[in-house]
Amino acid sequence: MDLQVVPNPLVATFMDVFVVSRRELAGTPNVIRSFASTNSTVAVRQSEDDLDGRGVLIWTGRVQLESGVSGLVRFEAQAFTALGTDVRDTASVEIAAVAAGKRVVLAHEGVRLDMPPEALGAGTTVLLQVEERVEEISPELELRRIVDVYPAGQRLTRPGRLAWEGV
Image (cartoon, rainbow, N blue to C red; front, side, top):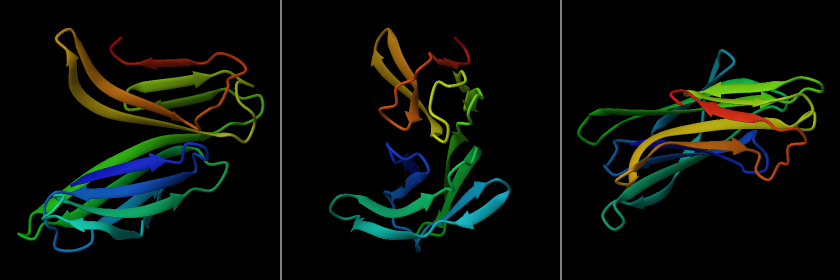
């Protein structure tokens, strides 16, 4: 089972949640969102039910955070296979609201995004998502992480810095 969180590219407080399974599950997966010491259930519905044909089952849900929030948003999906095996997956994003005259710093999964004051307009919500992945691109090059920063298409008025551990 795989849990994917896909932020809206233009409005970072909106996120789509996907639970993908290549094995038959005993029921609908449970998805919990944890944010600011509050846990809530994410309602998911099955959108793909073709295990025999396409080899996949997919459930989808949506999450909307309040404007102006900052912190780690963690998701956990849990289900049982048809044979009774407990399967789980997690995903998370770091989110921050830009305040006038304040620096924005997001740190998540070994990646740090640092933007000086006034780099983005006040009230903009910035989201940092990091996916760990080991994929050989060529014999000399290996992909280790995919880093996404939202909202897409923003132009910084002052340069920021993106860095990761180990470099």
